[in-house]
Length: 347
Ligand code: NAD
Ligand code: MN
Image 1 (tube, rainbow, N blue to C red):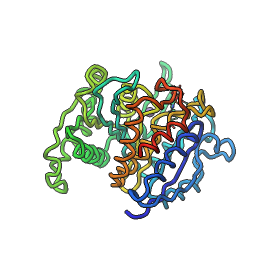
Image 2: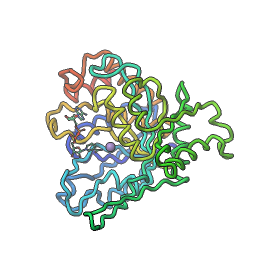
Image 3: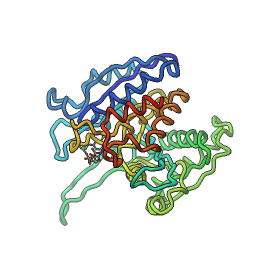
Image 4: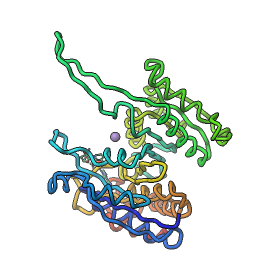
């Protein structure tokens, strides 16, 4: 791919402080990536309060002309607000970003983090309970609420392929399927069975033969994740389990300000730091930009720009390891700008 048109959606709060840092790092890569063109776009709570739409259609239209995007964070209200719905959930749908991929790895000298964590959570992003088909009905004994949980062979198979592809690029080459098919034998049974069958698909042509397949019931997977995270390499899960697992995994390595993610489809990828808009530190210039910078690297990796991605990851790791220029969430006293400068210097 020779063009690199990137939609930039800082959105709310510290999203506006960390996305410019990620942009600066991409600009500094020079000829290691095609010259990036940035398209600034709006989404989130602030634009909702002005125009009544958290995801203006101009943003979606513009994204469809881009090769990739970087999303900051939104401030979602905890109460129900008429007309508001989370732009990130909508974007996943509009752009068919069916995989949420979150690498979680410990870095030496990271205070509060566990050693030996090096895993990737691959979460199905489009179905399960998130189809949001809920119903409530009155009965003689009070109200009764039901939800539909959708698991399809198509979505399970494509998320399975994504997980195997990611595992192929990692030293341990291991995929753990997360499910609860001992209880939910039909829905989780289909997920498990479909992912297990991926390596034997004719179009795969044996490409995943060297990948080891494991499986684990979701509750014991969380238990073991906290006790012996080193047993995991790639974990693939239906939407709800993946949502919970990926936050739990992020907790293992110290700060939310370190953990990147991407929402990926077959033809589009959107990088997104795992953290939210952090209203408690907004405007102070102390937000950790490393999660956003790593999200930019992950975005590049998904586009095949491995050299650029590796350079960013190495620079970030050096800055963390040296431990001299860190934001307060990592026990340091540096500002966002100083951490960015340190990363740029290592590049
Ligand atoms: P949060 O991630 O914004 O903050 C949690 C804690 O971590 C805060 O103390 C914050 O200061 C700290 N933190 C987070 N990112 C940091 C960074 N880069 N550097 C330093 N410290 C950092 O979660 P929250 O407080 O539960 O939510 C705040 C808002 O963000 C809410 O409106 C919520 O809906 C939204 N949110 C959005 C997303 C998203 O856009 N994907 C994710 C989570 C929360
Ligand atoms: Mn979540």
